[in-house]
Amino acid sequence: MIVVDTDDFEVYHEVVGELRERGVAFTTVEPGDPLPADTDAVITGPGDDVDVPCDVVVADPDDPRVAVEEALTLLRGGGRTVVGVDPGPRPGIAVLSGDLVVAVFHVPVADAADVVLEEVADAPDPLVRVGDGARRHGVRIIDGLDDVTVELVDETGTTPYLGRGARGMDDVLAAVNIARLTGDVVGGRSFEPTAGELDVIKQRSRERSAENRTITEDLARRVATGELTLDEALERHEGE
Picture 1 (cartoon, one colour):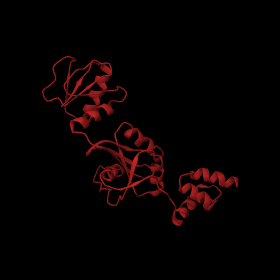
Picture 2: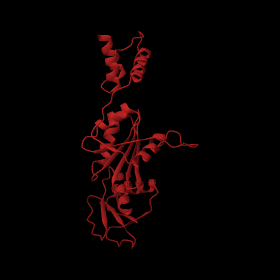
Picture 3: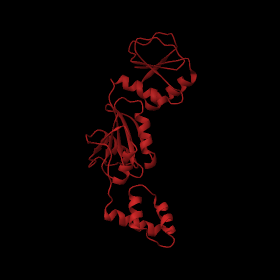
């Protein structure tokens, strides 16, 4: 049982709201009152002086989710933090504590590495597992994950069938499955675009350009590796 025990109204309001939104069973007590016999963890505020015979989590009212996740981890006996990433233009990201999914995200690829780093910042020995599809996007994410252990995972079969009402959830659900698969540890990932990938980028440059111009293969390669955007490549091509 999670118990909220605080004099801080803001902490109380934010933490209780987060617990209710997640459907977590909890109760509240006035500071100094006895705790229920089945208390596993107490959530309190930074200014509270709580002396209880169980685990205590101090909540930041500006980020109650972190405290709730920590309390849930204690409730379920803990577990390693593992982040699964299904790469693409908008990667799905799933954060697991042990076998429990504690957070999911669906963000632009430019933000993905920062989101992952924020989620593992305070975790002991976190692990990030990235799917091996969407190579260009996967490289960009992995390169942004300095000092974090990363595994590259075969993502074949990780995207589930989506039934009625589940549209748009495929990347997130695939990320959950990726987080649960063992991969190969990588320190970085080289990316050499194929001739077909370069041809696609050149075709897009013709479609994007008002003059129907095709960027050079060198510029197309720099777009493929994420060094330039297509618009930046077109600007450079026009200046050559």
